[in-house]
Image (cartoon, rainbow, N blue to C red; front, side, top):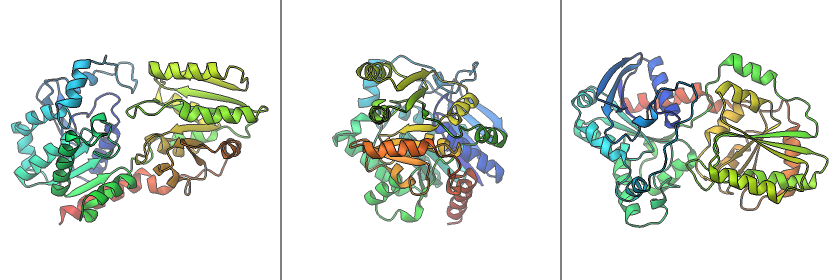
Length: 424
């Protein structure tokens, strides 16, 4: 079996889509499925890889290539590019559904790509960016191949694009595009059950080709994981270390530091005999830093709360810092998205204190993960927060790691889906 994956962001430093695509490639390699990767590059190049072939199509507008620089310092985060106002206007208003549509034209008429498509069984496109699905649909129809659409986020639902938040002309254009892509697809993959239900409610007769493939647990070396578990905080005193890792605003700019800091400060006022250290690890924006400074200033009379900031660190050091915490902090303003950080935290068997909107999918995880407590952002229950923080900070051996989200289980499901539809 041959699968062509179209992912211009492949190998772009810090792009979250790489983790999911990397798993698909690894799973296919283990099961003798040949992969052809179509990605962006500084020039047209064909490379042989252990898993198949990589075709790099010239990225003439430098949409992703600027993030594919050599990682000389081995850090996993992306380099910074100063925001350009004109570029932002063009992206948000003139290129529908996104700028990658420009690169798509080069791919569609590339002779090497066309040859690989002819010899393939499936074309897999992963969004965002959503324009990849339009390219996949075009190639699928032209060469009569089955199209797998992998939706890491919603297209119309909780869109990362501000222009789709109001149902104007652009919304209706993209709704039509989504409908065409969904109708043409052979397989639809979403990263959460909420994304899937929203899609099924919008389109009829897609249940038999629609599936949930969560991001699942990260692959952590067994030796490192055992070391982290053995070094976990045990029998904590009333000095509670609570750690937040990663960006705050991120791609969903509605997230704020006060979403996870404020409930702890409220608890601090009512628990004077406890000392809370809120440790924030990650690259913060100027706005994040200003907000945290304001929070500190507004509560400078509160002596039992300390907020510390630490820049991004290497993966192993990060896991060590997380495992040494009494409670891990998580916030998500999305209702449908499952933060990858949740799966990482579960793997570490650490208590988790999360904040999210009341309709969030995170609440559904509380039933199967006893070490998780989710607080409503809209109306936080301070008394329950205090009770749960004390309870979470003393949890030791009751943490569960449900098998459902293990990479092997997700791999088995993915391969079953592909095999099933290959034979239809």
